[in-house]
Length: 71
Image (cartoon, rainbow, N blue to C red; front, side, top):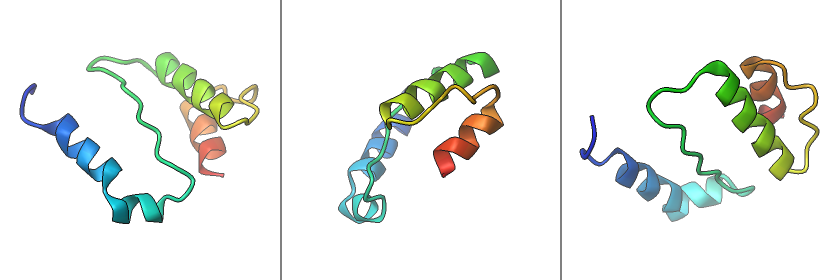
């Protein structure tokens, strides 16, 4: 449902000083949209891993991407 403040709330959390000190490596803001399939999520994970200077060649599934990003 649009216009109820989801994005505003998420931004408030991301910019909160207590949150920022907990996630000292940073917070990534990624826009996914309303309808997204698994292949698009894997593509976004690969891009994020690349931005973090990691090797995204092993990302074949969402779970692969989760594991790499978690580590």
